[in-house]
Amino acid sequence: SSKPASSGSSGINAEYGGPCTHFPNRHPSTFSGVVVYRDFISPSEEDDIVKFIDQGTWAPSQSGRTKQDFGPRANYKKQKLKLDGFSGLPQSTLFLRNRLSGLPELSDFIPVEQCNLDYRPERGSAIDFHFDDFWLWGERLVIVNLLSDSFLLFNLEKEYVKVPLPRRSLIVMSKDGRFKWKHAIAREDITDRRISVTFRELSEKFMCGDRMVEGKKIMEIASQVI
Image (cartoon, rainbow, N blue to C red; front, side, top):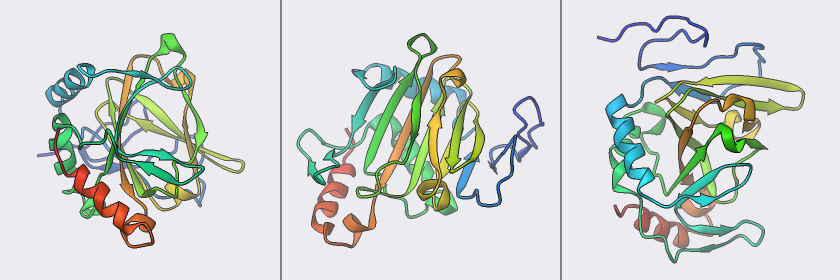
């Protein structure tokens, strides 16, 4: 049976394996739409995922990060997509994608992109405050945090919220946490190697709007396991 997690230095106090949201400094009344699930995967599952990920090629990214992308290539300014080179989502995270559908808020979540980001303190890895694109990606962003504890920062005007990301946790951003609050990872919060595995779904434009034909094709490709 699950046991309550103790409130330690991270300040988290939630049912083991259950959802928790934590705001250590402020409790802005406007902050919502962010849930963290502790211990979403086991240590052995984490080992297996990292082993498979590291068998792939890491490409240089921005701000000291490296990345691996599985999904459509997008020109966000021109709002155009290229599907060549996209053949499906990795076998190594199939169990993760299946497990997501067991969460009430993700029962209808259809991931069409997986982005792996590698953060290392010796490279000064970070990511500035930003919104993930609204044109292509849908309401829910889903991130699995691997290898080390960290924090996800949120900002809306003059308000800031710092949400702990325990190792092996899952974070789900939706609604205001996705569309109103920008998010970031600060350089000082990367104290050891960290890998984030992000899954994204399509926006309404591609699900039921004027790009629905493209959306159907993207979902067909994403359903393939490579």
